[in-house]
Length: 263
Ligand code: T3D
Image (cartoon, rainbow, N blue to C red; front, side):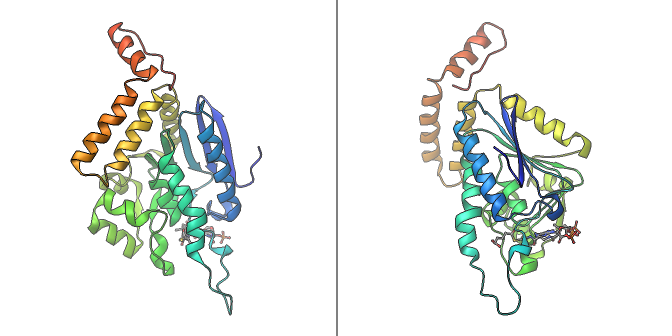
């Protein structure tokens, strides 16, 4: 399968997906949305893929919507942004959140607008020390979309979420780590090595267990403790029947390295 706006490869049990419109800072156009959708479908249905890495080509991770695609001058009819969210951005965020495998985002440079929030939708966000996160929406009369108004207060609290959204300041990666917006800020030269190492490691680990972890952590936002305890019980019951659980315990008792198959 060839792609025009992304790079897609599978190696070492994980998929690597690179946003690849560097001249436009990897901003989203409809072709990129369609290609991402296709690649994510392939990842979802290929059970040999046990982790995913998302990154960007060139000096940016992603600058959000390609604004040159928007006709706003003169008497142009208003753009229906509700429709683009409904059909393009929201399905992308939902897919990233619900994939059954760990999704690592390596933010290699500036992440602005929807680009920032797509990164934050991933399970583990690593960023190059030189990268910045910008909730750029307020500069063009919009609000943080692609899940921004949901994830920001949950990650950094209401006060910081409000300031980031209303000021649209560039938040350096070190500060993003300090505030808990991302997992780690890493030296630029080490970012991709570290992200690939992480994905390769995930690909040899108990994949079903990871799916359970993702599901439980995400459900916890909306559940009270009782409901969450019940959910943990149900998921654990299922995982207790997995091959990987048996292998994990047997390997521990036999003092050997486990061989997990993701089943
Ligand atoms: O529309 C809908 O469907 C609703 C959904 C909306 C989702 C959104 O994401 S809305 C927010 C859209 N994004 C932005 O507002 C960010 C716009 N970009 C910037 O603010 C800056 O470019 C950055 C802070 C990201 C980086 O600044 P800097 O100084 O490092 O680079 P630059 O010089 O501004 O940009 C370099 C080139 O990329 C430049 O093109 P040129 O002059 O070299 O030909 C610039 O126009 C282009 N570029 C950057 N961002 C976008 C873009 N082109 C199109 N769309 C962009 N978003």
